[in-house]
Length: 270
Image 1: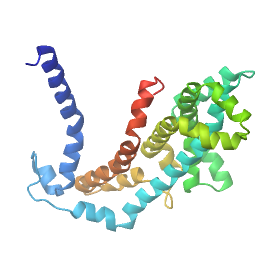
Image 2: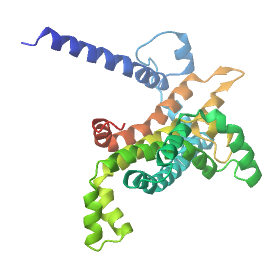
Image 3: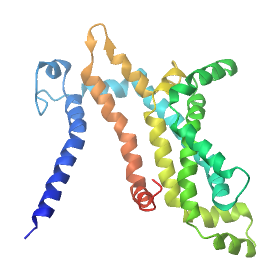
Image 4: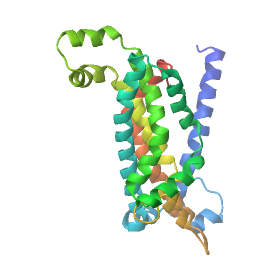
């Protein structure tokens, strides 16, 4: 027989899951309706089920190019952020140097700063060097926020690895690159997974910089979704279908790093 306390926890968990999933379900529900049915009234299920909204997104270059553009600069940003953050985090975790704590704090302040603060400097700089409306422009802009976050997460994982492992590897004749790739990286793969997840998700959902620094060739899907607004009204059905498809990449990433995220929370660094 279950205790009343257990029953309350179960009911609370069920209520929370319903509350969290309701907006997602409603968006999926709208994506299979027509605009007339959406504005006509309330319904839990589509009365006239249709795939036309998804067909529009997957066949119209103006739509699916937005997903491709977003994936390109997000992947570039994630790879570069981890490449830069790994040696930086190792230095913070293994060495003590003048101003190390101040530099570490300065990195975190970049992550705390709203993206709008850096919008004008990035816009003027990229306009001067010819990087406007390119994937690398958005990827580099997002590094300002993702590198500090990755360094902070990775430093916590690296500090949990005993220094004796480094010393033993050097005694055995390992060079630093060989030691770092073959021995050290496998020990912190959970931290790498967590860092990659957060870098991917921030770059994927960020809109202000991505929309301002692009116009046509590298326009992200979040900016493309604004084209559903017209003089005739809002194209709710297509917008809902686009919203559902934007969830898919994030869900895939979460599936692959779910165990690493749990370990990150357990270590108190996430």
